[in-house]
Image 1 (cartoon, rainbow, N blue to C red):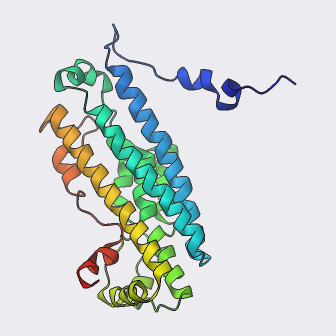
Image 2: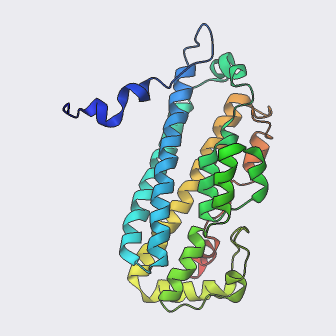
Image 3: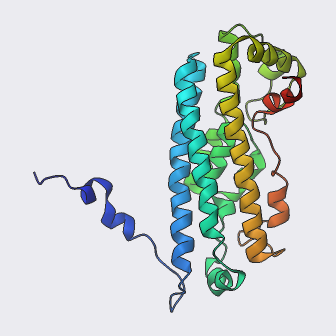
Length: 259
């Protein structure tokens, strides 16, 4: 058996061989575009891995393991936001030089990003129609899985909080809804338990990070293509703006003014 090397362990040759430009002659900035988006997909893979772990921790009532993972997730989100600085070095003219090579391909079609949304509780069943084959099957599975918020309800129950019936009876394919009744219980935990305050603040940090990433993404799209329609057939900037201020944990945001 040959000695394991860094390159072999990480499959570096294979990794470096998948950046295939479609422009001919190759446009200089197309490689940047490909590398950044492939990197995003790798980060999405890790985010899904960590969110599944948090979901399991919540279902088991484990506070500190969940806290540790939320810290990691918050840091990953900061990295995702930071990568937008690199994408913003693409000018409208440099992007236009190879944009037509994308044909109907678009980040709008990212299966892992939709999984990310579904796992967090932002469930829109109609979005599955933009996927096909294996990707559509995976999204349908995610749609029917408990979300992080569903697991959070279970966690709260294990720590003495009664979850309102309308939250427990909500169809699993439906998006998260806010609950004034639950908000009162969260306030008591915030005021009475320092450990819960730490957890809730980390969850809010992560939620804010998603909103920051959405905003930066929208501004990048607006800077590079303006009001043009997205390559995947989406409505471009206007479509993206619809989810800009969406909260993953609306109840944690709703009580801020009472703390």
